[in-house]
Image (cartoon, rainbow, N blue to C red):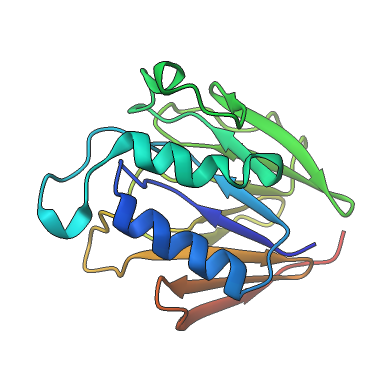
Length: 179
């Protein structure tokens, strides 16, 4: 199954719209959100800071969202999202591969041998590290990229990770081992 993995929207309705446009354009079946969805964003007009609008936009896809909470999601329950938010982290199985999902602000790692992939956000910088028995990747930030990176997301397909700008330009790809 093709999944779009994103992190750190930080209440930007403008960048959330771009994210969802890319989600549809890529034909993804699941949207994985790695935290910091609604708060602590920029008030610059370009970002269109509007946490309620972000939740409304995401709620249109509530059935296909898996969301782990980030350090800035402390009040998200007050916005009453229709999609479920998972505190801390979760382990899911995608086509025979165990995947650890976390925002990354806590030093949580999957228990030894519990996952083959780990996806986290928080740093706002895209990353990929292969440690042999665990591959760790970060999609970067939807709205507030750091370290000279672009506004970006990651696409997961069995056997492949691709990083895309929000304009849909692929700038990195990594082959994944089969389960």
